[in-house]
Amino acid sequence: MLNIKTLFFTGFLLSLVLSECLASSIAEQWSRVSLPTYSVSSQSIGAYNGGCISGAISLPINGTGYQVMRLSRNRTYGHPDLKHFIEGLGQSVAKQHLGSLLIGDLGQPRGGPTLSGHRSHQTGLDVDIWFLLSQQAANRTLAFNERETWSAPSVLVGQSDTLDYSQWSKANEKVLEVAAQLPEVDRIFVNPSIKRELCLTHSGHGWLKKIRPWWKHDDHFHVRLKCPKDNKYCQSQESLPPGTGCDADLAWWFTEEAKHPTPSKIPPKPLILPVLCDKILKQ
Ligand SMILES: [Zn+2]
Image (cartoon, rainbow, N blue to C red; front, side, top):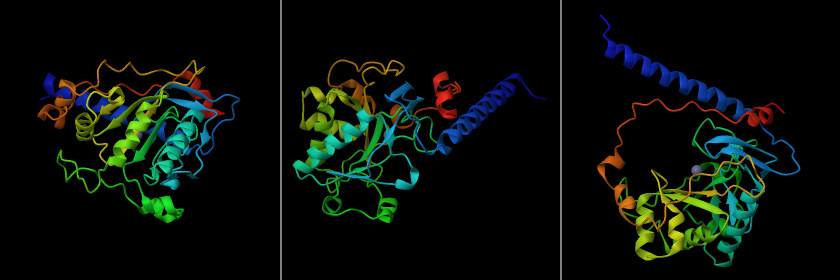
């Protein structure tokens, strides 16, 4: 006979499955759209993990100091501020002969949820950048095939917390330092071991505040820009806590609790996009 506990658990599982199905069918609609909407001014709408963008533009696949990878994914779109940021960072990287930035995903043509890879990247203000600063790519244009098949190497030794110094270098530190100091950058997600390293090598530097430890992120860093000026429907994330974040908060990331979090008993909130995004999807 079914007892109340079993019933509750089955209900919980069912709501989990249903909300996952719903989320993936919404993501499918957004991923099928191949072109952005036209808009006089680009508008990021909603939250980084629940929103969209009108008037997105595509980042050119080659530029000074950078090349875009995984072109088949069609995730080269974003707000003009994001394009401007990547181009500026590429120019700094080229000027300092650090190699070439390899750019992963920006967003989809109209933003929105993706079928794979991310919860965020929905408003055209997020970009993934590989830690691999390729000297090869600095000297020649990569072929389509190379952009599909090269992989982003981890900067950690195996699955450990130790940095692999054959992959991690001062050049990586420099890129993060330059990026974090730009006023349009809201925060940058990196693996906790990277944050720990930067806290040691750049102790007390104010820009460390923007470098946020997060799970994975050992083969790329994720830059999130602030809501652009005059984008009144863009929803900012909560402000960063004061200080450089090199304290107890960072230590938590190396605890058992952080490494093996117990699955939450609360089902994830269903993905609800702003009503405006509906219109953008259907245009
Ligand atoms: Zn990302």
